[in-house]
Image (cartoon, rainbow over all chains, first blue to last red; front, side, top):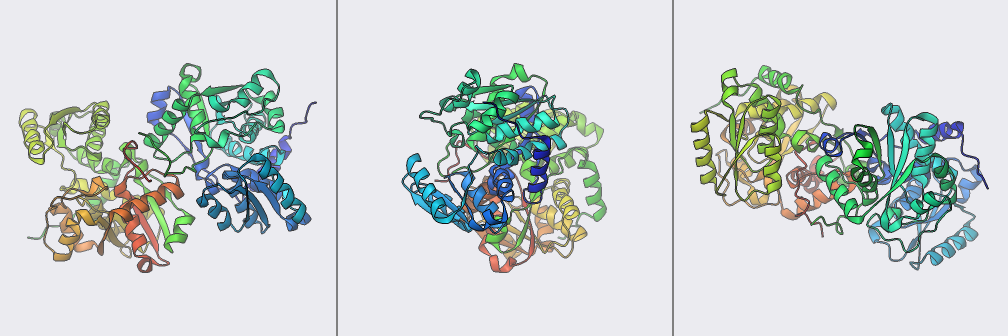
Length: 317
Length: 317
């Protein structure tokens, strides 16, 4: 089965749609890290995006794409992470009711953040089955539209807008690196490069302990994520079929990195750049540092996917 | 004894001098913190300055003010903190030899950073007396010029340039808050406000455990810092006589804060703004949050003094 890729027009429409809502995040550079890496790095800082992550782009684009009737019935999703907050805030900004299914074990700070955006939180047992069943029930009861975190081209196109801004700000990039979890950011970035900066090769970083995208990319067949384990908690989900259809076509490579490499890259960025990035964001940084010769003297951009870290749990010692 | 304050011309000269060398650091805002504080806050982010702290401004201005003969003989200082790196890098950029006396107990990462800028590190016993004696010997041997970390109007004028940039970027500020340790940043900021934004009141935050500036300000007499203790390790030094002469005249108030208030303010900034700030930088943030009614609805700037944190020692749990 082949899927038709979203068009340049689709991408331009998405960018026009989300532009008034999203922060245009800064592109930062750091001489100290350039010296260590041996290349010229541009960090597109989605940790400064609303809700602290790129996910707000996909949520916004999807909700802006709904019909008036769909908007009235609201939106629903299950997530304990950045997607929950992204949908909740995007819904609030567009006056759309939002129902967020969250595992009862989710930290209360996360539940409160979602409630703070005016969304209704529905708690369930902390299993994928319970989450999916609860979500189905909510949708049956309310008529709300399901907003998938990544397996939806509206989400992909929303996430792509980070790279659209990046290509406006930095010309002639040799490489663009992103993390890969469900694949929304990676496929969106690859799509944006394909249309707007075809000379830029798109490469992903993925944790060794959650390497389903790597395996899928190598074999050309979608591999499910089995017992993934990584400090990069945003990347534990299985690669989605729709993002994969784009990734297969347009991505150059996926590089896996160890937990130690992720932690060390995260520390380097906190220390040298004085910005808080979440472990998932450190994954492409680690992928670059692991392959210095490949990127030597190149002009490389990295999308820093987010900055939501539980500071009480983090330890560098 | 009264001291003559540096003039507007002195300030403009210092700004012209350092402008090509320093980063023009960004002014960031954060809606979430504004909502918590009940006012409009502009964060002047010197954590993004070269060497990760405003100290690079004072070091640069002082070194740029030296005669050619002084430059040939080099510069010397004792410091285990940001001033050491600031002098080392400013010296390197101007091809001036630098001798930095550091206590043998200083973390090797700090010694290496200073050596990395090409400065000569001279180790000594970790007492103020040993530091001063060693520095005197170095100066006697080399003819180097002593660069004091704060008790020097060239340093004060250099630090003042952060506020100069701030006033260019943000008009009609009601308040400007800074931390106070030796007083270089506070007095420089007050001087800049005096000449460039006289409607802006300058207020400092100081740790309760190192409140010599508070006491000096209250009594009008310089109080030495006796056994200061605070997580805000940049603020343990005694207020200098020269900065105090300006602070007495031009500062509105000094507010003391507890260790808990400092830690909580630091966590808030890391979490909500996704930037790494050092404990000293959190002190004026804590002072603001402790006095919400005083700053209610006002337009307030805070100078984030630096972002050099030992991540292996920090804990939020």
